[in-house]
Image (cartoon, rainbow, N blue to C red; front, top):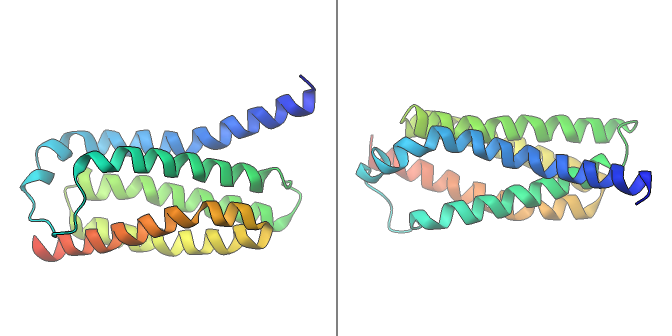
Length: 162
């Protein structure tokens, strides 16, 4: 294995580990509430069953990590790459914060505020990733669609349970 290949492999592993770690942190806040508080909420008819969330989020986190890797490998010397990575970090922090706000604080209202900020940060990240390269931007599209759906779900949960 060449040094360059090994470095790229390490970068890919780190890039995928970052969103997976963010998801793991968020799941700590989610774990208790998902079996106690969350089932007591009145839900929309289009609310997916609980088993859907883990595989969807895991897939999305891996795709986010690959997108981050593709941007990172363009080189940190490029200002647009630095901007993209900062935006990615902001939206990842908001992604984790959403779990803390919604499930940890048991607050659909706080969750709604955070997820709207997440949606905006994600749009800015996608725009920047697309400007760097098409592939990383496209890898974030399913995440964007899921967060858009989750925003509607969160808003509906807030409305039905206020």
